[in-house]
Image (tube, rainbow, N blue to C red):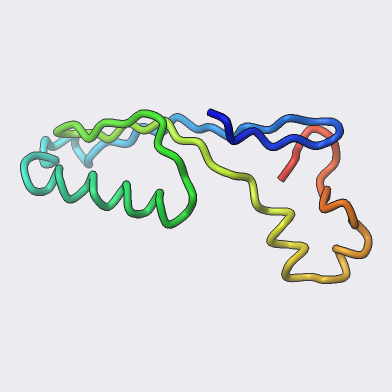
Length: 99
């Protein structure tokens, strides 16, 4: 994944492995339901700038490995302009977290 975020002290790649199952593991994700579930997941990820690296919608579970951009500091600084003055380099979090 080439969406590394680089600063003077860190390189950040945010990736998550997600697995969730249907209640009681009922095999309901078949046919049109499975197809629509897949479409909705892709649509939601696209809307949120989340990249699906791997994924499968099985009959009773969904498995996804995703990568996503970190945005918390940018959003906070956009919503609270006084933070931009204090953290003029757009680096808000201490070393060890780069959001």
